[in-house]
Length: 240
Ligand code: MN
Image 1 (cartoon, protein in one colour):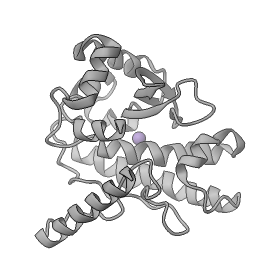
Image 2 (image 1 turned 120 degrees about the vertical axis):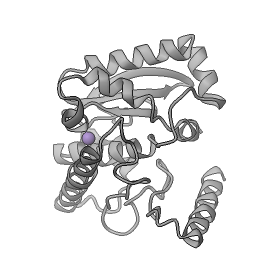
Image 3 (image 1 turned 90 degrees about the vertical axis):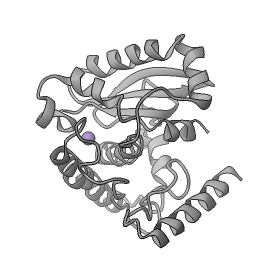
Image 4 (image 1 turned 180 degrees about the vertical axis):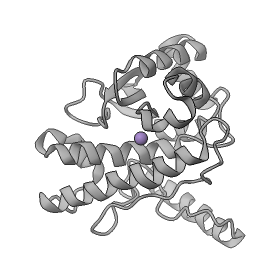
């Protein structure tokens, strides 16, 4: 019911944008976690278009980083996922279902499937008009779990900066309560092999490719900049 509603809303919004000639390539950029996950239609996964221009997140994330990150890194995950899926005859399995049973599949599916899932979520969790503090259900859940918004931020920043090497920091709904943690490489909390489990509602890519051009070794500066971009509307939507 809910999925159908958001699908309808999406179609309506999409049609309006098309009529308005907004030029934003929103087709296929739909509801994460549902049957219409970008790329789950047809026989191959596809790179979802960015929901904003490459330079839209300036000055917090630079245009060149966005071009390489989306157009090269994310694209490579999609291409290599399609290759792995084909080689292992895993076509027609939804991305979410691959994630949930990832222990059964080869490493290439884990790395590239995780890469595709995580980045598809990440782009939508940022917006040029983002930042500030959330309202709605997320605000309540954050206060319940962490005491305050700033206490949550501190914990999230610690997870993001203490992840050794490449990985992701997450805010996750776990048995009705929010928790914070991180995963290595392209793992995510949906994966059965993950120590951190649950429904992710906020994600931050802390691979060097996500920030090195602008911030070099100063990961914390990138993490702090990220808070100016968070799309709390999307976070609230993911909470369901
Ligand atoms: Mn990345």
